Amino acid sequence: MLSLEHSKEMEKILSLLKNYISGKKIAKEMGISRTSVYRKIEKLRNMGYEIESKKGVGYKLISKPDIPYPHEIKPKTKIIGKNIFYFKNLSSTNEFARKMVQKGAKEGTVIIAEEQTEGRGRKGRKWFSPPGGLWFSIILYPSLPPEKGGLLMMASSVSIVDSLADIGINAGIKWPNDILIGKKKVCGILMEMEASLNKINFAIAGIGINVYNKLHPSLENASTLQKFINKKISRISLIKSILEKFDENYQKLLEGDYESIGKKWISLSLTIGKELEIKEGNIEIKGKAIGIDENGFLLVKSREKIHRIMSGDVIIK
Ligand code: BT5
Image 1 (cartoon, rainbow, N blue to C red):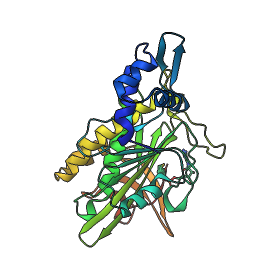
Image 2 (image 1 turned 45 degrees about the vertical axis):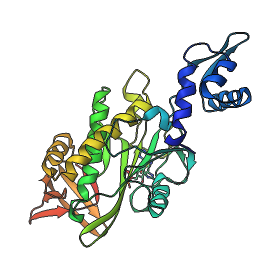
Image 3 (image 1 turned 60 degrees about the horizontal axis):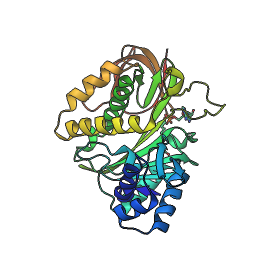
């Protein structure tokens, strides 16, 4: 596991390695022994950093891997991502986040895994999470009325779609939690929340993005971001941008500005204005999506009436 706590030392040695530098000089600059310099260089190499060593000259950093290590992301934010943890492998980042909440993790803590063995979707569904994607969770203690909880999901999806637009990818949002390019799902969000009568105790925003990972053969309507763009996507820049945008949108919500998130969400929605079928348990509703209400519920006009829908699976006709 890597966290921002390790970041200072890591950044220091990486910055020294920008130009050729001897092991002796690194040791002096960092106040450590030459053996530990050697160990640190080996550790960086194992992490995917390409470091050249030339006899009589020293070491030099040749290339960095596109791995979302905390010291590489360092988002410019007020709340989100001040604490970041990176794991090579976890069962589920949401699961781990829950454990961290019980231990009193700080608001805005982000947990990232290169690979999840038990990544999950809604209602116990499986979320395939092989290496090469972005699988992460954000811990929140939002001082919002519980009925506004749905807006957190909207703030997340809006932030992601905006970040994708910045790198030239045109995506949209299918209510409630899918981000699609054309008809292909490239991202899903699992918002888990625990609330009492008038307070949200905690929320965990679990975000899964197919970046350049392999896709499980059973997935028919899924794709990866990389398939839609010619230049290599940087997962580091993408997650940094999402955390920064989410930080801004989250603050808007905390300030009570629910409307701007709602409006933005509608402008990016692939659902509003469409005829659809919604299933939630045994209930099935057919109608036209005409908007969202002040709490982010979907408004669907059927022949009989207007339904307010909190969650469900949608088939767009
Ligand atoms: C979701 O559920 O779309 C929410 C997915 C959230 C995943 C993140 S990853 C980080 C965090 N930690 C976790 O354990 N989870 C969160 P839902 O709407 O229920 O969609 C699930 C369905 O999407 C599955 O039944 C599959 O059909 C499909 N699916 C599974 N893996 C996929 C993938 N990698 N890409 C696209 N579709 C996938």
